[in-house]
Length: 267
Ligand code: SF4
Image: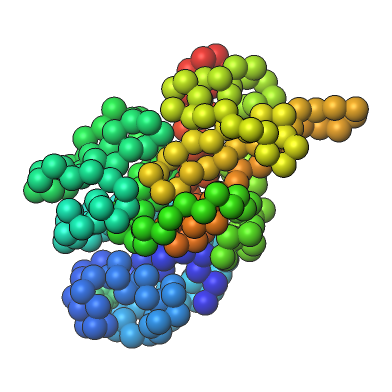
């Protein structure tokens, strides 16, 4: 089994929620298969061809891109079954009886209890919505430790690090290189905080894309023939509160979001 996340497995299922595998939804089944708690053959509707596709690393990323919207609807469906008051308390959100409100980058993101509709001012792209919904479903409510680790130090982060660097850290580095006010702008627009410079960086900024998942961006300016560099760090509790797969989407989604912001400013 080489799936990098539950979504890769989910995209291969027929999404009928028929329960013949013993799980309530195809999404729940995909999660258990990913965690090694179920054999994918327990779904009678999956053929040998799909199982082979799952073992073919190269096919996965583009298929996942195409299926993001469908995956998001399934996450929304499972969220509608949650106890909103209990979940809000666990994940650092608020619940007023009709809407759960999660703070994302200093902005409000609401999920209506009755309709499941989103209420937010944030410009949302699937790669940011997905980890947000996974956070609502799976966050364990672990306290933030203050111990910053790189993506590759998260559980299961190592094998996806190169792709994370390419789609997340390298994109942000290029922005920081050419967009002089990049850090000032993200601090002001997304409620970031310049913090004491960590790991001997020139700039360290902490953002809260999710209440219990802070992200620190560290940037080293170019000097003496050496190029600049940029790394993202996560609190060690991200293992319990989000998991490396969703952290991957969160980090790369933020990079895409900031890239759009930079385009808007003519960079
Ligand atoms: S048996 Fe297959 S199609 Fe039916 S709910 Fe389980 S995973 Fe989904």
